[in-house]
Length: 182
Length: 276
Image (tube, rainbow over all chains, first blue to last red; front, side, top):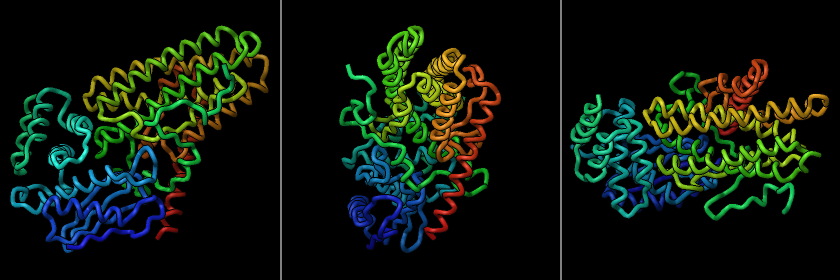
């Protein structure tokens, strides 16, 4: 297993590639992804926080700099933000590599609702690894995609408390919540 | 009690980290894209944006710290000037009413931030609003804070109200609508007092309007607010009219904002070329 972070030296932000690499290695161990080579490409020209995976050897994770940033100290790296963002995307990598998620649409075909359910599922599992997560933030994100109602909150709870869902099960929880209020 | 309080001495606890406009301008990154495809270029904070809830949380925190500084600024205007000689009693009464409104807005903003999953101090506090409230002429403060900054607040609250409306978040929609009504009143106060105090002093009026223009330009930095969908915050023409702006004044702000956006896009292209 190798972990590479690019760029090795940052010019727009005060990030540390070795630090990012150490955090990534810890998470890779936690999620049993040691058999894969991973490269993390940080786009430091934007403060946005989008992330994208390209499968191959290595698996390439494209991350915009906002995903690792301490928003209270612009351009500085945040250890919790780096851990949460890498944790979320690495759990998604693990899901994509598993047969349970074989039928999940490609990233570019995911709807905003599908992105929200998958992110909720990733963040919830991350929180059970002793990683500090603001649950309300993700509930708000989920409500934005499923509606501000009880059916949406019940769906969120179900996903939040689950560990072994398939893509079809995730999708079904979401569909049920949306159908109930239509 | 001390008069004319400097921005560096504002009281904050350890949760807050303050930055200046210089700090913001030193950040060469930009969320403005040079990709002209409609799906890529739209930055407006709307629910259909991929990072909608995070973008709304960040803006909500900006509103929260802005409300604190607006409270501090209006409070200083009540105290810094001698009643009758430097500022009429009725103007101070309006500023006291504004303090009351801003204090309520701070509390509403904290509750909305909790609701949206943000923590106090999660984002940096830009202190430029209070800096605009440090002028030694009350008329300049009214122009810079009540007309320029509270005018921006009208744009921000309208954007957030519409966000809540489209997303189905009634708490956000109604709370923003109520605060928006107050902001329209604050801007109207600024417009009315500016006209009244400078009625027979065209030079002072010009100076105040020039100062407002500088503050407007500062807050248009980077194209954050304009009528283009490329800007995160829109320009709320209708509510600005209600607040006492005439069409020509709104057009000037619209042009200024659009120019700032184009300026930023050109700077991005230049920076990207240098980087590659």
